Amino acid sequence: MTREEQRQLKRQKEKERRRKEREAWEAARGPMDLPFLLLALLLLAIGLIMLLSASFPSAQASKGSNYDPLYYFKRQGAFAGLGLFAMFIVSKINYERFRGLARLAMIVSIVLLAVLLIPGVGITRNGATRWLGIPGAAVGQFQPTEVAKLGVIVYFAESISKKREKMRTFQEGFLPHFLLLALLAGLTLLEPHFSGALLIAGMAAAMMVVGGIHWGWIAAGVGAMLGGGYLLLFTDLMEKIGYNAARISVWRDPFGGDLATQRGDAWQVIQSLITVGSGGLLGVGLGKSRQKFMFLPEEHNDFIFAVVFEELGLVGASLIMLLFSMLIIRGFWLAIHARDRFGSLMVVGVTTQIALQTFLNIAVVTNFMPATGISLPFFSYGGTALAIQLVEVGIVLSVSRQMPAPKAG
Image (cartoon, rainbow, N blue to C red):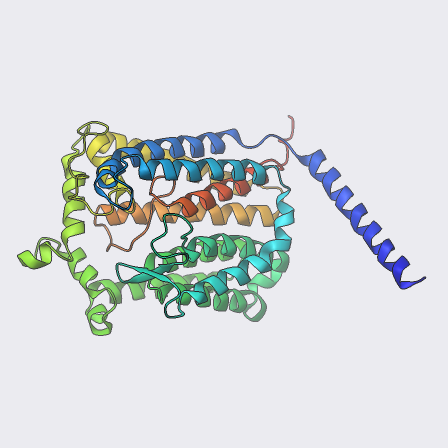
């Protein structure tokens, strides 16, 4: 057989393999999970409404937005439309195909995070270099951390599902994933982006736990995390190393400093607490927040949930938190009932990301933990982040379409 005939035979076998894969996908494919989809769309709709309410004062007063009060809302709406289109496309793709993209996704994630560390390449805001793109451009900027989150989900799901029982071993299971996790979290910390590193570590750790690593390493990891948290938050370690020490002192007692501190480092936390407290039980009414008029910084971004508290009150904020809880619970339910290990791990990764990000954002807004600069899924302004979140929702829906049918009787 000639070399050309061998290549043709190989192409024919590949076509046949893909045909069988499509037939298996068509045979197993069912409807996407409606509860998860509706919860995600409801949170997106509420998020867009709250973004419009929170952002119009700063947009109307900003030269960068051409004094257009709808500037942030229109841009977020455009990315929401793009994200929804991508979500439905991804939901119709056999999620097994993502296996082939796992290694590429991880390589791209590491390269993008490393590029941020090159002087003069990344875009710096508020002392953190977290963005790539054209400085000052209205579009075209993104955070590599958002790409890295998706890369971690796909790569860890593929790697862990392939190794199966080897995950209980140290050398082949735990160590390679831990070293990769340490590299990604370390690159993110150097931006600096503490909350991003925490999210990546939390997602990867959850997937490793579900993947079957030894409980002894889990206990060691939890112990190290608790010990490190205590050293950072309740000792003078942060002041000695000079990393976000001011945020720790502000978190401990935002009203305890002098007037200069209250108008400086503590201003955002103080205004957030005032915003949250101003809403009371039922809120001042949708669109009627007073704190968003140049008092609360980042009112349409990291601290948008404070505006939710003020306008909708404790009752409205609690209902939104309930919706997030229902989405998270449904996500883990889908992970339990997924057809295979790869799909289950991807759903665990996506759901854990939403859960951690929601908890951390609300914890920061209420000063339950120090300010870390973390957005609220579906609510905070950020087109790239929103589009990627909707793509991740599409991955969950793709997995849900191949769930085994319940047995009769």
